[in-house]
Image 1 (cartoon, rainbow, N blue to C red):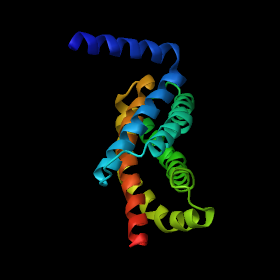
Image 2: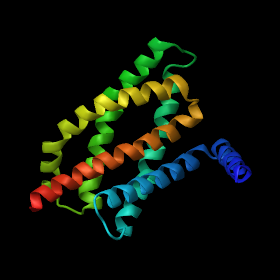
Image 3: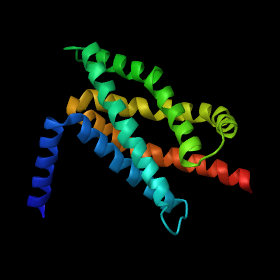
Length: 186
């Protein structure tokens, strides 16, 4: 079994070298799909909603994988050759004041408009109501992830690490969005 895992990992690393953007996009799609499947099961779904699962995978493939790829390339250029705790702290702060608010806003809009198929006004009201608490929670959680990512992960693994943790974060956002919808329906 371990030989098969080693071979698969070697092939994955090769794809990461040859086609980094595509590999990160596919990885993000798979992890987004897994996170949605887990969230659906946790929230009591007896049967997986495949359309919804596909839309989460589309989000990972078309947005979060490519966004992460280019974000980390940009961070590497901005801080070229600089290392150490001060540089890591600057990267984390820059990420938290720029991409974190945008990513959470974009996810909430995508979830409401595309996945749930709700009208613009309802989605905007939900975002206005829930965005502050989601972003505050993000600022308690993601700086630690960012620190680990910038301090310990090689550049080629940052998007994958971020996507893996992001899959867990998506379960949280997903369940938060669902709990709000259930409360309003009750």
